[in-house]
Image (cartoon, rainbow, N blue to C red):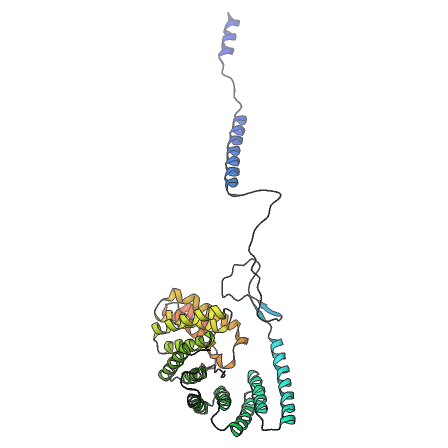
Amino acid sequence: MANNETTQSTAAAPKKTNKGFIIVLVLLVVFGAWFGITKYTHGQHHEETDDAQVEANISPVIPRISGYVAKIFVKDNQVVKKGDTLLVLDDRDVKIKLDQAEAIQREGLVMMRKLLGDEHPDVASSINNLANVLQRQGKLAEAEGLIRQGLAIRKKLFGNEHPDVANSLNTLANLLYNQGKLDEAETTQREVLAMLRKLLGNEHPDVATVLDNLASLLQGQGRLAEAQNLYGEALAVQRKATGIGEIDLARSLAGLAATFLAQEKFVQAEASARECLALLENKLPDSWLTFDARSLLGGSLSGQKNYSEAEPLLLAGYQSMNQRQNQMPDAAKPRLKEALERLVRLYEDWGKPGQAAEWRAKLPATPVSGRNSVENLK
């Protein structure tokens, strides 16, 4: 009887389960499910193979001039956009070439005088060529003296009214302006304008060039209404005349936009700046002129309180012009300060005094006057 009870008690006792085994089993099932789903999802969007080719676009960067790299502004695999400065070339080779050009022009002038005498048209042209090189080197006083020599020769050979005489006078006006001789520069430029209108008519491309030069000179003196009218005349001639390039048109548009900005005529400034920028982005996408146009457009939008659209234009305009200072003629250097002033004004008007103060600290301590960049006659 006792044995039977013992047997029944043993049979009725439940079997013990291994909890550790169950936990491990559940974890394996969960991990397996997760791994399978992950591999399936990955397989839907990725291909794996030991024998494949990858297609990619390569955009070579080819500068228009050769030279050693002075500074690089980007890192490997950095995303860039149109207009960003990637690198700056060392300009020492350019200066060396200017020195070589000066030596060649001086030697050529000596030979011309020896072969042809002092009063020959080719001697006058050689004098002008040397003066232009000296002007690019910043040797303005010596260049002025040479231009006056060439002018005297041309007047003696051709009389007081001749296209070559007008060319010498136009170059002289540029040199006078760059030396701060503003009254004489204006008088000389007006003499050139009257002469060319008489010789060539009112709708000749050279007349448009002188109108633009005179407008730029007056603009630098703060005579904005006069400058605006002259830019308008220049543009009217340029839109009609044959032989006018898009760059010449863009220069006049930039001058007009700057004149409108100075008078706080922001809507008119925007129209001129947009047309100017479209021309330059197509023809000279990496030139300082293009970034000057961006700054002008940004200034016109800022004046209309369109701050968010103006900010990237003003930043790109100033920073890229600053990186291209060596490309800018001395007469155009004031535009860099103007671009910086527009940035300061943007943040002041936008209610961001901290950023305004940051950019204001970069302004030069000494004033920079004028906005002149006189062009030679064709």
